[in-house]
Amino acid sequence: MRDRADTLEAVGIRADVQVKLRKSQARKLAHTAAVKKRRRLVIAAGGDGTVESVASGLVGTQATLGIIPLGTYNNVATCLGIPTDVKQACALIASGAAALLFPNATPGNRRGGVGWGHATATSCN
Image (cartoon, rainbow, N blue to C red; front, side):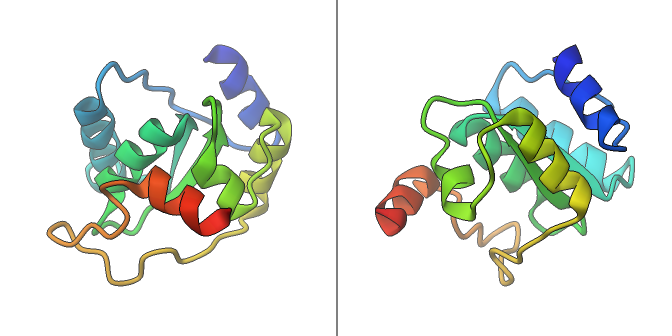
């Protein structure tokens, strides 16, 4: 993960890297970063499952989700037009490009939480 942090640093983003072992841990780390540490940007580096877990942890916060696709299929990143090349994905995050995906999502109404990968793949194909 150090090389990912170095790539982010090269485009002007200083990263506090946290490694997750379980999906629940990723949700908690993302929520803590957004709420307690007041991070404006939380980056998920991984596959669709990691992205979904981190996104779930950010529901109801003001943080922006950045995605570095490192998974097998990367359905979410592909559908959002995020490059699968790590350097290009980091440059995109640094550019500040953003899209509002689920404007009505709340902690009790996590649109896109369950089956997000399948629904995304279905809508993209």
